Image (tube, rainbow, N blue to C red; front, side):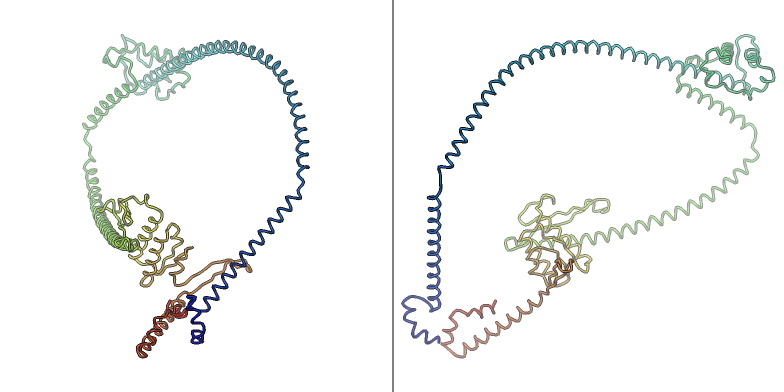
Length: 516
């Protein structure tokens, strides 16, 4: 058939410059279809123009004009009525405006009178507040003085009562009677009550506030008979609470010193027994102390040992992860334009005590200067984070990875790098499950798992697809095409010149598909 076509149609093809009859038929068919298409378009356009012409010729334009004239007359009437009403409202507004000005003047006058009254009221309130504050201050001063006087009365009564109880002889002015007899005379108590001073009850707090209470009068009379000439000059002055406590402390120290001297005069026969008992107790305490000290030393040594082991294991992991991070980040960022890739590293705030400080992670993408992590783009942060994750995985590998849409912030270039790295690692020691919406991950995976809704059961449904079978078919097709090419080459070498002319012809579509 081929030779017949070349014999009969060869001159025609040579004259027209066509390769074969099919090309001529296809060109003729395409030109005819284009002509028919243009003809149909012109016919449809002519029909539309004729219909539009008929519609415009049949329209009645007088009726809309009449309607608009009627509407114009109606609007003019309304405008005239509105202008008349406007004039009427203006005249009424002038009257109202005059009344308003009169009311406004009266209001201003009332406001002035009100301001004067408010000034007077404020001045009176200020005077009242000052007088009230002055009264409160005077009342507080009186209450303070009364409280101080009441405390002094209580101290005087307590001092006199304590002197009676402890049988302390107070120095009296002149040749006065005994303090107890004076109490009997003033208080009007019988001798049996004064002979037992320890049973005397202290007056209540209300008695100290009553100046002319019998007991207060008796205390004043007793205090008037006491001779204060033997006191030091500084003690005769009124002392503050702090100075009084200091004086009492000095007197107590002197008293305790005298009591200690009195006790030291009498020998203690049980001192030797007490010393022996304390010595035995000291020996037992010293043994317990040495035992506790030894336990503390062992615990500190064990703690230091565990601390050193922890630091050692941490530094081993840190060194391995840092080294792997540099390699992995370089592999994930290098390309034909940037064959050296980027650089990433970890650093410790305190290398001698790593657990007392933090850790810094820095990444420098290719052809960029050093920056902090927060200044990088979303894709650069994602690539750096994945590199750190893979570096940590390399120290103690897990059975598999599950990554959920880690490619959300990646562009196509970085996504291809990540896909290539995961695909390369998955062929050796790496298993990975990636949840993604990008086609590039689908193309480089071994299998696909899809989740969809089953309308019939109103539940989720799982679809799986093993992509390795297509890789096997492709490999078989490539091997078959390679075998066909080898057979053709051998046939060409055996037949000579004529097959070499056929080899120069373009390959058929079936051969091209097989090669692909």
